[in-house]
Image 1 (tube, helix red, strand yellow):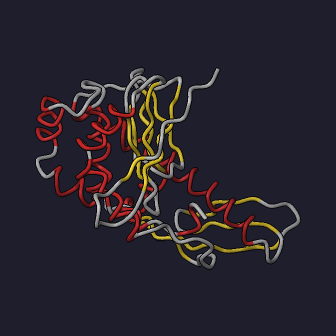
Image 2: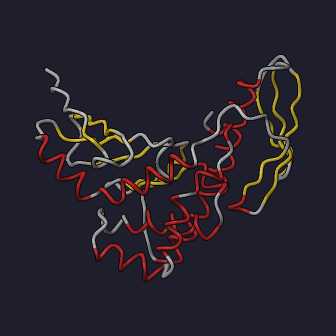
Length: 246
C-alpha cells in the first residue's frame, strides 16, 4: 500500500514571497533531501513514515540554502526553444564548435573536426536537430570530462569505480556509495576552474559521503577557493544554452 502523501509546506514566512514545497515520500529514501529545480520549484523527498513535524524541522534548518537556490533558479530559468545555434562555445575546454545543418532523409550527427559538427535531418525539424545536438554534446562530454576526471583523481590521490556522464536538470554531479561519479554534460559550458572544483567536490565524497566539517577540510586542502567557486557553480545554469534541455 502506498504511503499517504505529506501536506504541502509553506516555503516563506508570512509577508514574504509566496511559494510551496512539494513533499514526496519514497520507499528508497533513507534520509530527507531537498532539491530546487530550474524555475524555483522545490521538492523534499522523505522516507515513508516521516512525520510532518520532522519535515518542518528539516526545512527550517535548510531555509537559507533553499531561499538562495530559489532566488538563483527563478532569476535564471533555462531558456527553451531558442534558435538552433550556428556555433557552440564549450568554455570548459576552450573550444568553439561550428554547427552545420544538412538536410538528409536519415537523421544523425557527425563530428568532422574538433571545431565542426554536422547535424542531419529533415528541413524544419528543429526538435530533431536539438535531439542530435544533445547526442553530440553527450559524446563531447564523455570524451572530455572522463579523461579530465581520471587525471585529476590520479594527481590528487583519489580513487573512484566508474564515471557516468548524464544530462541532469538539477545536479552538476554526484557520487554514489559504490564509488560511481556522475557528471553533468552541461559542465562543458562552465569555466575550467569551476569544473575542476566540481570534480574535486565529487572525488571528496569517495572518502566522506556527507558534507561534514572533515569533508570540507578535505575539499579546502585541494581547492582553497572552493567557496567562491561553489557560488559560481550555483549560478552556472545561466551559461547553459536552451537547446540542451528545451
